[in-house]
Image (cartoon, rainbow, N blue to C red; front, side, top):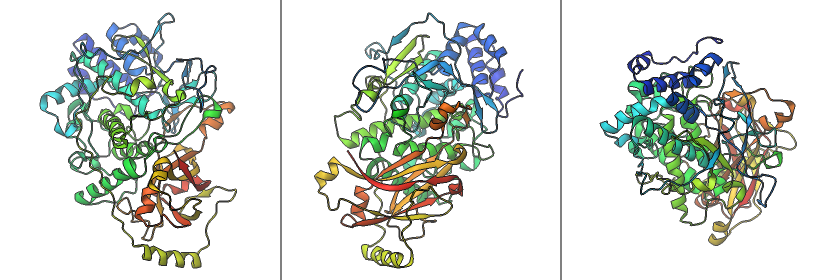
Length: 570
């Protein structure tokens, strides 16, 4: 072996109990390879010479890769060109502790043809109906225990874009939702074939519903258990959807109330436009670069990854870092719920118009191996109708709740007058500001007292820009508007809460050439809808608002911000 044993062990009982049958032996080998933080050439040769099913599993579950689908230099794409990845340039990665971790797939046969995705023929192909994890029966749990042994580690920034030295990334942009939907689609079909059940579907962890806010018990049993979790958060602890590492311990009923208020903001008041919910418009090349996640990706996606991951590990592995998150079987119910919430949000909009209409989004493509070892190219436009994909979700009623108007206007008016007399507004000027403590800024509003029609057409949004996180570590700050109360103890239950920024570390990176440094070090942007919030605070007619950036969990020492402004988003 060329590297020392990985610090995260493989469960030995799993290896011995499944070692007789050829297919299941291949699955065990897959688990071993995918849960290790190293990947030796000896093992690579062993798998390539092994049974075809082992080759199938490694190529499909492990090799989630991208390939050009269109000529990105031709055509009129509006905001930019569609994205694709250069498969000939997969980069080895290193953790922040300088441990090697290789996300690259096995070699593909040079003559293997790429086929375009076709929607499944639902008359011939059984529906896979996703169910809430806390409502599963024993028969289903038994199936999932077999299937989850074959999870995969997907690449994050391991490829360059086609015709560019910029990295191809599927987080922190409008590609987050469609890529993960395609990922789950092929993952379900591969696992269904492996266990001999073509109706198998992943459950979803229904953490936005009070009855589903604890970690599902079945993921802590047998092969689905993962040692690299924060065991202070196991059932019956209620998940904190706005979690930070210096967490506030609440009673279960209070935590549920906080979660419901938080989800209302992330799904409704702060996410009324696609740019706000889905993320920034990432397109090909340096001119199309952006780094701005939507509301749900920032939290509760990132926050729950961190909440589950072990605080004993440098990057809160497994769930707490992108490179290792898929090693934990709970990754899949978590992302199945993220995918479900995309559908819920679309229904809340009550609009037949696609989330985005730009070809740069619709024609961006991802390439996966399917359950039959075919190399399939799927575009974003293929991922937009979950029913046509044969992936309906048996969904529960969305349970978010609008926060109360927690402060009277006269109370804020008095506070504002005292603030103006005692403290000059802090302008960022030409320098970044560190968030070692709360930073409060005064913003001028160019448009006041807009009609409801105007607000429906354009959402007033708070933009925190030029966010830099040192070392790509975990970092978090909350944002408030016209906050009166103590910011250290105030959270989503207060109507002044405008949203949150959460940086989840990749945990694995390559040392890039100088030409890629600007991509790796790209600053982030946070956009938060505030039209409804200003109405609730009776501040819609005010000329100015005060914005507070409140660092959480001691992570502000690693955060700098260039400034805050107001934009109007269509």
